[in-house]
Length: 337
Image 1 (cartoon, helix red, strand yellow):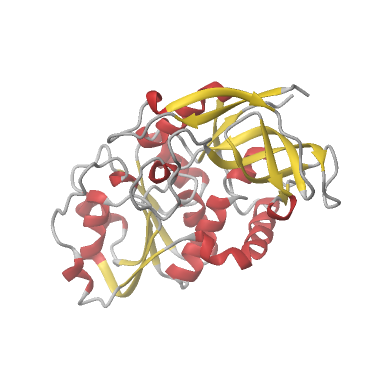
Image 2 (cartoon, helix red, strand yellow):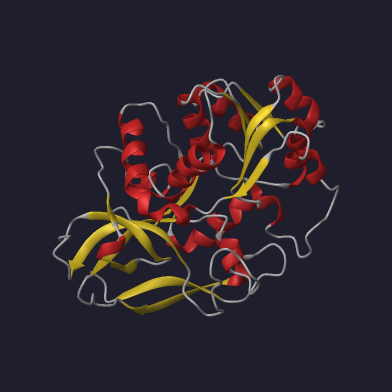
């Protein structure tokens, strides 16, 4: 074990779209675990769109970081020093840690990683927070019924790709919006989506959606916002449900565009629009993890990760989220030795 660890800190708040000047790599001493804590050598760390809100001083659903703070997110790693009876050295765990080579984790707030079910990166995606977000967001907020048409924006991302597959497992007709032909092919050929729309090469979202979902939209799982959501609202069916999970199209806007007012379009269908925070379901995380794990082990739920190598490249991996570089979950491989 090294005596020092490298970790990323917030150097300055972004104005609009973040850049590498917002990040600073610092070296510090490796800490020792207090009672109930685990010292973990990080093998993979997660970068997620919600972190953009934590970089700003304004209100967000996640507490903002202060300038100078170490950045945090989901990690997978090996326990190298345990001050808890629950875990031993050599165990693989996942939890909320630091963007660094080593991290202290509370033993009560980690989950074990079983490599026989899936490789480590999957525990930051389909078997981690994004998977649980998809599970509860679709099933509890979207309330899909067999035969429903489910539309997903950001469908080739970490959350959207799981949403669509769970919808198929529930007997739904599934349509996804994604940003490349490769992503569209992955959704339809590998994940079983009934149709997918490349929003970057489609001029008329409304017409494309009407063709892909001729019966209208019963459930809309929104990760993106913007013009895609504008196109979906007029095609909502009676008693449609809209789960608002993310709005990545607007995360870097310095002023929020008002655009055309869409709320009148939910009056006639009496649509329900509900925001979604996965933390509201924390008491049921075990249920979700068990079910997701069973689906993955049975081959009924596919997962894919885009892996960026090297802790030094973590900011680039994060910035790549806003360019749509990732297919599935974007993760950083810190150390697999």
